[in-house]
Amino acid sequence: MRTPTTVTTVTTEPSRAGFSRRGLIASAAAAGGAGLIGATAGFGFGRSGPGSADAADGKGEPPRRDLDGANGAQVEPFYGTHQSGVETPPQAYAHFLAFTLRPGITAAEAVRWLRLLTADAAALTQGQAPLADSETELAADPARLTVTFGFGRGLVALAGKNKVPEWLKPLEAFSIDRLQPERSTGDLLLQICGDDPLTLAHARRMLFKDSRSFAKVAWQREGFRRAYGSSGEGATQRNLFGQLDGTANPGPGSEDFARIIWGAGTGQSEPVFSARGEPPADLGAHLPEWLRGGTTLVLRDIAMNLDTWDKADRPAREFSTGRTLDTGAPLSGTDEFDVPDFTAVDERGLTTISKAAHIARARDGLGPEVQIHRRTFNYETGAGEESGLLFASFQADIERQFLPIQRRLAEVDLLNEWTTPIGSTVWAIPPGASDGGYIGQELFEG
Image (cartoon, rainbow, N blue to C red; front, side, top):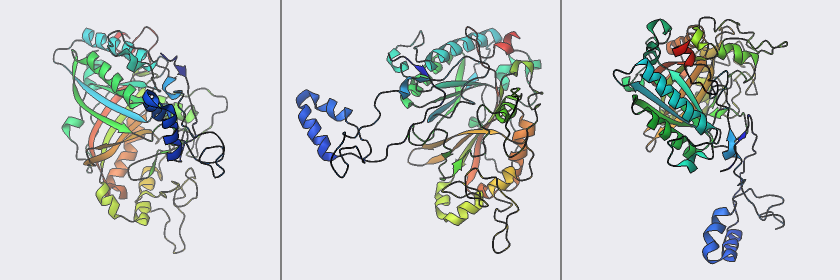
């Protein structure tokens, strides 16, 4: 088994060119007989250019991909103050798996379930097979696997009704919602993310097997982003509308992130804040003691009507969002990360960014506390029968941070023409576990 290596950030330059048919055939022929499959399977479809066999002068090394398996060996930490999968740079694939408790489950049984899930998730994320794993080889390459636990109202209530925070309930109704009840429920959420879909599928199966005696599946949804290595590390992802999605996120490791997501500052002597100003340091003050070191999650399943979006021309698409499609720059700027100027006007004297544009509704006039960390994944089922976005919004305080944005978007947002929320759930994200402990220990034993 390959020894996993802990990595926080990785930069991989994408490979873009094709391969030489002549070189491939020649290599296969040279291998001969039983070696044919190995030769073709191991041959690299690398970029053409100087130093490659496809270069104009015909000199250099044969093109090849990065086949050393380094990505498969990468691990993200499991134990710690915070759960992984929140501040972790988003992986290429995600699976959201929600469970409903079986009737009659007691607090003691829930603790046994959480201990089992925690132990197996900890092993899987480190490239180790759980004790009951019958396909141990599938656990060997973690590929930045993370498992993040979210607690619903029903699970928290097992520890005592007085432990349930008031905000841990369905969101208020919005006029734009067309919620499907089966996608808007659950007592425990597992957000399973990774850069390898086989690793992720195996982890999902192991954790499902752990759960069968305690709960049944309420709903599940698979999501994806760019494949590992196809864009630079830290690059903003694109959704199925082609838009850059997540430009305004607070930077991981920053004082902004600590206050906005974890609800408490880091004590940095010289904190750096975004252009939106200094967020309050008390956004987590309302969290119950058992949730300190954790955060909250609002997960919205947003259907996207790609057929009608296709009928809109490029100016209409950019007008509705307030950003350009190619660079993601606000219509009042030139770079993705330019601060939008909502007072700028064009040569006709008209506001460059419409007051009804998505970016204006989500940002203009709102204070520095009204920020979230969006960790989004695209989804598509069948032959494009169902397409959309899994919008995972992390924030310390739903009432002060998420709802002011959502209320404005529900009132007016040009992008609502093409999007429809069909699922909505609210979760408490407990703090991380210590080695030998389990997720939720502060709730059930605090």
